[in-house]
Amino acid sequence: MRLDATLAWPFFDAAHRSHAERFETWLEAEPSARFDADALDDASVGARTRCWARDLGAAGWLAPCSRLDVRAIALSREQLAYRSALGDFAFAMQGLGSGAISLFGTAQQRERVLPGIFAGASVAAFALSEERAGSDVAALAARAQRSGDGYAIDGEKCWISNAGIADTYVLFARTSDHPTKGLSAFIVDAAQSGIALTRSIQTISPHPLGALSFSGVRIPADARLGEEGDGFRIAMATLDVFRATVGAAALGFARRAFDEARAHVMQREIYGAKLADLQIVSGMLAEMATEIDAAALLVYRAAYAKDTGAARVTKEAAMAKWYATEAAGRVCDRAVQLFGGRGVTRGEIVERLYRDVRALRIYEGASEVQQVVIARSVLKEHSLG
Ligand SMILES: Cc1cc2nc3c(=O)[nH]c(=O)nc-3n(C[C@H](O)[C@H](O)[C@H](O)COP(=O)(O)OP(=O)(O)OC[C@H]3O[C@@H](n4cnc5c(N)ncnc54)[C@H](O)[C@@H]3O)c2cc1C
Image 1 (cartoon, rainbow, N blue to C red):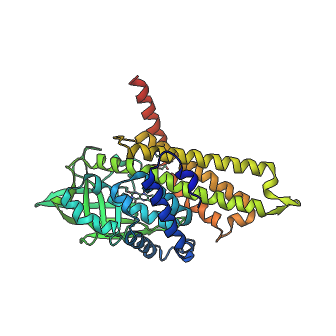
Image 2 (image 1 turned 90 degrees about the vertical axis):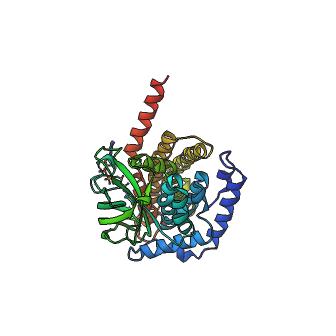
């Protein structure tokens, strides 16, 4: 992957450049089997995810997640997604699953849980969604009832990445009936009795995903993050940090699809010339390249704003996630088209990218939710004058 052009942008400092270059060297030295392994089977996806988390942690590559360095997280996700959807996913979940603890945990909570996650020895998960509460977080029904000197948790969670393989869940549950101010966040040890994986969910791209049930799961009071009622704020602030980095992963998929398509059209013979010589094809390449750059600018603008002290980057992150994931979908689709029949053949890289990129327009806020967020923000800016 050619990083030099992006790294020359003013969003990055010398430490980011050095980090990205060293990470690239590490990735290039990895055996290609690690990346190819993503392609086909779902059966061992959990074990592979744990393996990615362990190796990234052991080599120190999860450090950007511990510092919440959004530019370094974004660059890492872009680099990983270029090669492996599962590698990107394992990296992202160690960040998202620990983010609420990094942001809102007490010193004791952070010391207890975070070192294992950043060393890759312990796998993290973020358990917010439920069957009837995805985009509509306020509809969340799982409950945390005061019980003795702690809480008892009951409820179901659905679409949880790393369900069943995680060691630690940051779990959101209701402590009162207020739609948003009634939510609280808890650190839950996966070994606790009463937690069961009720269903593994197979998706179009290998991803350890499942539904969980919590039945009378007892946790101590000091497992709560922040105060009772802070859960919605904690979830939104955590997503605020990581949302733009979903756009970065999309960017990695799009760059790979572009590189594959460009190489293909330059060598594919057609009508006695090269595919790249057809004007409509060069127009497609121009669109792909421009959309990739536009997405990158939005992603790194949001990451830069967060890193340089903006309290909230809700609008910028929503723009980055929405535009980059939608654009990457279009880029991967065009790449498939340019490969013709090969493009839809199992085992082709562009076929895999076409599947890998799809879920990004849904999770951590569907595209339409991002549009609502952006519109709300620009309307508010207008009313403030
Ligand atoms: C691969 C994958 C991994 C995931 N990992 C996690 C995880 O680790 N932790 C976790 O808590 N959750 C996770 N999720 C859940 C994910 O966040 C939800 O799927 C997502 O928020 C959408 O919720 P939903 O599926 O219930 O769809 P719904 O909320 O029912 O939405 C369906 C569709 O309705 C439209 N829509 C929704 N709201 C609006 C609106 N306001 N205006 C216009 N249209 C709208 C959108 O097109 C949306 O896609 C994951 C999902 C996937 C697919």
